[in-house]
Amino acid sequence: MQKFKTLNLYLYAMIFLMIIVIAFPLYWMVLTSFQPTTQATSYPPFLFFKSFSLEKIKWVITNTKIIKWIMNSLLVSLGVVFMNLLVSVPAAYSIAKFRIKFNNILLLVVLVTQMIPQAIMVVPLFEIFKSINLINNLFSVILANIILTLPLGTWILIGFFENIPSEIEEAAVIDGASRTMLFFKISLPLTYPAMITVAIITFFDAWNEYMYGYTFIYNQDKWVGTVGVASFIGQFLTDWQAIMTSSLLFSFMPMIVYIFFRKYIVRGVSEGFAKG
Amino acid sequence: MRLNISILTNFINKCRQFTKKEKYFPYLFDSLIMVVILFLFIYPLFYCIAKSFFVNDKFVLNNYIKLVSDSIFLNSIVITFLYVLFYTFGIMLIGFITAFTVDKSEQLNLPGAKVFSAFITLPYAIPDVAASLVWLWMLNPRRGIINYLLSYVVKSEIGWLTNSDLALVSVLLVSIWRLFPMHTLIILAAFRTVPINLYEAASLDGASAFQQFFYVTLPHISNIIKFLLLLTIVWSFKRFTIIWFLTRGGPMHATETLSIMIFKEAFKFFNRNYASSISVILLVIVGTVSIFLLRHLRVQDGKEGV
Image 1 (cartoon, each protein chain N blue to C red):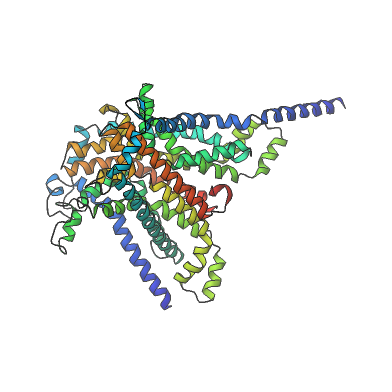
Image 2 (image 1 turned 120 degrees about the horizontal axis):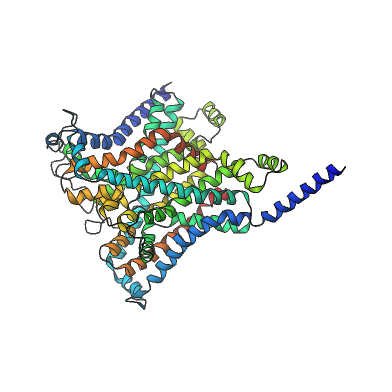
């Protein structure tokens, strides 16, 4: 029994430590945002809530374009999710089901795409989009983000399509289903959960993206949230409360998505990796 | 009989149509992704390579000659490798520790274990920008909470991000804080693939939890871990946002990885041709490292492991 006690002690210590390390920055963001300004910026700082106030949140919402930027982020992220699924679902289906040489090459290219740092792509994409007048248009950010998120999505979907037993498809063929019907009526409905997983991971990545949003868009009204929040550093140099409040407002959406869809993320990750 | 024959011909026709179409089907399904990859990946990549050879619209090697003697660039290569090395080591270690803790506490049914395992992946939901800004505020040398708490122990102000010896460490810690949940989830999923009866056999032989981990779990999941290691290393070359917000590559280029340097050259100093030549070098480095790792890690699981 002694053995178990040391293990338990170790586990409790680790859990305690990890909760502090993970939660403290989040707690600090919330604490800084929701205090009256005088307390939030006082030094020595208050470690706990002394009084609660919404004054800074109201100030940030009315005096900056944060809501507009968040809406832009939402538009871009949903656009990326839609385009990503539109492209990756058929490709993943093809790679998983048709064993032709071309598909092996395609899979390799998709995996190589995954490895290329964004910084390499940003200059050529910027100049290409400039030459076709897409700069300062949110669509350019959507397009650039697709290539960023496409590989992982395709890859997760391939795994799911491969898991569909071929007996189901064979039975459908015998019943007279065409290839198109096979895809739309049999395989597609079976992969809805995987598509949700891919959609969520894509959403997070697109929401998180900064480099393309910063370089492609220069009109303030069209900024995405990351760029908007980042602009607070330059604008309100030492107003840490404003910076924290905008960060919190911007983190709100992914937090909600995370809380409701956590199991899809876990499942996608587990099934994507643990199979091997 | 006539009815039967018509059914038969019908069936044969259907089969014929099917095989006829079959040949073009994969390409039809691939067409969208081909267009996307061609225009948004291969074309820009060649564009970048071509651009790196030009100075004032003349085809020359000057950009590459300049690279060799650019001490900031050479420094960036070193910083990139330091970042990749310590980031990979750190995040794998944290991933293992957290996954082990979650796994064991769920097995032993410790109170709150389920809540804890949901909670631990929370940093994944915080965007890089928000995470960087919170840490920037907490690590602020004069008014940040961390220096305040440490002021009971250390008397001087610590410049977490302004001291060139410390900056890289701080950047690494924040990067790991933001990104470890994925590793926890993946390693945890790997743990779950180990058959329970192996543990039962091991504990009958009197192996402790830690022994079981090293002699049962690790060998069993080595393939997944090798693959994760490969991805972590390749992905760590991509890290940009957190470093950019915390230090912008400073102080004195102490945290300037190649990604940061490319971005600065291109959009701060407007040397896009020079930035392209650095991009090509980064491309070569990432390519070489990936090929080397693929050769030597020998991930043996077909498609998933390519």
